[in-house]
Image (cartoon, rainbow over all chains, first blue to last red; front, top):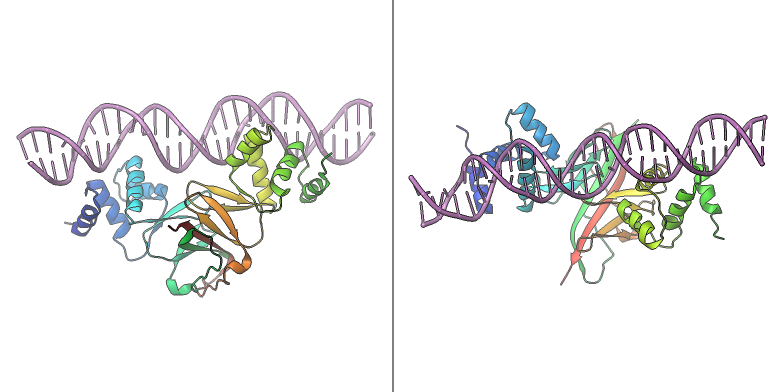
Length: 138
Length: 138
DNA sequence: ATGTAGATTATAATGATTCTAAACTAGTGT
DNA sequence: ACACTAGTTTAGAATCATTATAATCTACAT
């Protein structure tokens, strides 16, 4: 038997019912060592082809968005064609390989602290996101 | 008579025929002091409501994309809902006011030079884009 | 066991973008 | 001035991703 108790708890605490589908999605997204970057379409493909589980597209959309709202996922728009979700919700930046369209996490100390000198009256900084586009050298 | 000779030249040099529609779009986009940030939909609205010119949506899409390809415009994706084009094609960063969804240019010296310590073999850095999300501070 | 609010689902609806193919036009040569 | 051609514009159709709908199902409190 697979042990879902962590995910059941995680969902319950956040006010989401631990349904079969949500647990499947949790296992896929969060039961891994490395950060996972995905689009909803890729997620759907994985369930269909690799895992042979049929979770409707609507549920994937609903779930990913509610996970985002609960802070389990972060959304990253890299360009107009593609939007990724990131299982690493800590403050961090990204490489985007423009040849493969792959996102790669940058660790905190891979990037010097960013200082913004301009301030706008009545506004405060909410987040700072750095996207470093990389390409094949040669 | 309005003097379009600069735009006619600009288009011709880049290999685009200076058509009525393209010149109208040039005037709207480039005949201004401050940087202009827009979505294609907003552009369509301006032509329809403010300028009473009917340029088909297809042409706006075509033109904006060819202007982007020629380097007259830069595209900035700020979130999954919205993608902006920027008439300022120099290297610079942005504020995004999440309350109004407004983009604001940061000047070069508003942000310290970003140093990326990580390098990936066979890859080189193409660009570094910083998006600073700001919100009402109250 | 029952009731009910919350979830899932297939499908339809929407909305943004791209495609198509016909009509139009800028620029060239005559 | 005229005609030719490749490039451009256009309305409308097609496509694709995402969201809405409403019927069915399920977790879970009572």
